[in-house]
Length: 130
Image (cartoon, rainbow, N blue to C red; front, top):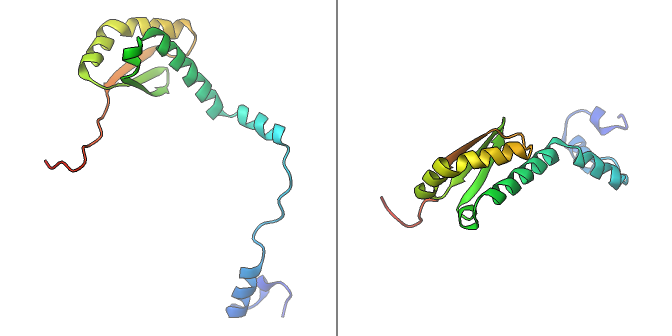
């Protein structure tokens, strides 16, 4: 029989020998600074930095009681989508604050030129029948 269990004919002995074999090679130490540098250059980190910048601008434009009832949903292709908790605030933001918010976002260089507001989905209430 060959020494390598992978070359053996199929059977229980071959299966046991392959099961006992180490599946991965030894792990070697990685240079941590290189890993962090690679991660910091990733598109995900760039997206997070952009989202943080957008969040800071939104926080600067809206009042604290308004910020508590909104959630930034996404920033995609120059459009910022914000979920609003109730219809009264949604109407107020669309009619009175949207232009100011877009102006600040463009002025701060966030890459956002359009703001979409939508009504936030409410979580279904448990234990309640329709």
